[in-house]
Length: 104
Image 1 (cartoon, rainbow, N blue to C red):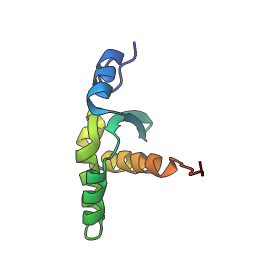
Image 2 (spheres, rainbow, N blue to C red; image 1 turned 30 degrees about the horizontal axis):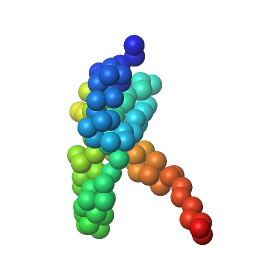
Image 3 (spheres, rainbow, N blue to C red; image 1 turned 90 degrees about the vertical axis):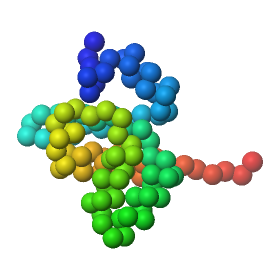
């Protein structure tokens, strides 16, 4: 069984039950793929990030990372550049989600 961020399938399922929907982000750095698992951002996390982003965009990214990270490969956990790319991918996924409203 392939581990993701050191976690097996059963552990990931436990995290899903505990934290809700999870997002796997893969970051390629220097030819190596690193992974991070995030919970979906909440309104509170997005609100905090948005408020901070007006003064300090990097701090806003750090806020999203700290509020949403569940587990990350060591390379991601120890390198801010990889954290930034991971959060950018997480937020891009949020922006790609589509919704449609219809009359009933």
